[in-house]
Length: 271
Image 1 (tube, rainbow, N blue to C red):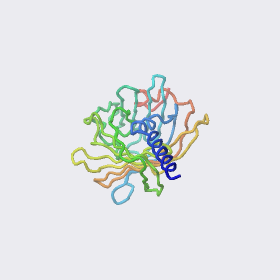
Image 2: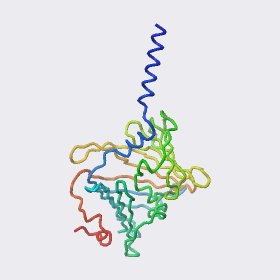
Image 3: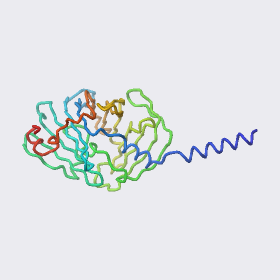
Image 4: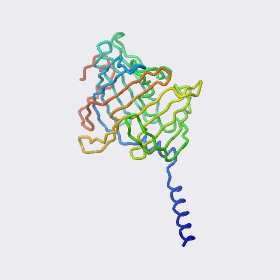
């Protein structure tokens, strides 16, 4: 009986190893999570100083659409504060091609393209960079599985069972960090925490954390997982950015194509 039990145990362990997911498989499944073909939302973005005080509150509208050429376009429009009102950002993610970012600032009254070097810069006073607005292609990084069953508890008190994966950029000059370590939730494949490490010192300098995950349905009844609430913390300065999705609509095909043009960025008016 002992021999049989040992044999069964060995077969079970071998099967478990056989079907365990690799780092690339996990990252690929995250990249391929369902994305709504149309989306609108309103975001609350707070900038917080090291003492925990909100120094700036931003209200932002977002529109998103996937076009037939596999381009995922997303625009953001600032409604407040008054000093940033009508600032607009367009992020175009092109499958298999270089992404494109543009920004319109009311004080300059012009649309300018965000260069590759400028994508390392912070977005409108937040701890987000332009690079943070996009989902990197799987092949943009090399991926290493650090731990296959790691538990992590985020600031909200929620504990997740995760894969812990280290991702190192192939083109290091295009990003502002040396590498990142990500905890991918085993239930949703979402990155519940991402630690970014400094190029020069190799020390932790920024953390992205999902505070709350929601499961939502689009207007067609399709299920999506949503990062309802997120924190971005600068570990060097102590400054934080909190992002909360106040309202959203997925899959309603009423997002006008003109939202994703330079004309709309200049005028804020959809044709």
